[in-house]
Every structure is written in C-alpha cells, then in structure tokens.
Length: 142
Image (cartoon, rainbow, N blue to C red; front, top):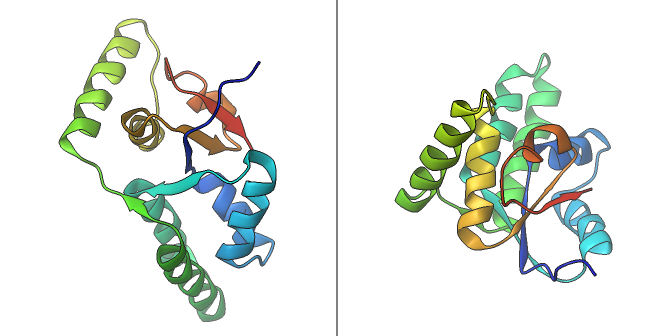
C-alpha cells in the first residue's frame, strides 16, 4: 500500500511541460490533482527561479510575455515555500552524505527535494533520475 501523501512540491519540469502545452497554471494544477488527489500543492522558491529563468532565455518578445504571464499567474495560484535555514541544513546533510558516496546531486533539485523533506511532502516531477537519488524523498512521477 502506497503511503498517504500529505502534500506535493512541484518540480519545474512539470510546470514547464504544462506551459509548453499552453496550459494555464490552474489547468496544470488540476491535471496534477487528477493524479495525486486533493492534497496541498506548493512550489519551492527554487522552482520559481527555474521557471523565471526561461523568461529571460525566450527568443521572442511574445514567448517572453507568455512565460511571464504564466509565472505571474502561477505565483498567484500556488503557495511558495522559501528556502529556510532548515532547508539549508537538509541540503548540507544530504548533499554532503551523497557526495561522500560519490553521488553528485544537481543543487536546484537538491534544494527542491529538501523543501519537500522539510514539509513532509513528496516531489511531483518528470525527473525521476535526480530526485530518486535523494534519500528519504518520496517521488511522484507526473
């Protein structure tokens, strides 16, 4: 029996895919809830940075504007969890322990995963490879 999810921290991979399919943030969240049910969904501040990065990489003003509108609506729709002192301690512990084993985790994914661990939530992602290497983290493929 799968553990009951308390909540979900969404990884940017899910939201970038939704934006590319021209979904609005509320539609993206609805599609996630069809998979995981009616549970709390939050973003890490790092996810906001990753999505925002795409605004400044856009190669046309139209794409930049569309991405900006998506991020602004997303921030108005989904609560954002900051990187806290507790998050930083989790990152330090897991990052150091894994590095001692020869496993290098991408910092952004480690920060998002640490946010989920801090909250007692799972991570919802399309990136099973990196998040699956974070010990103790429940990963939900979306």
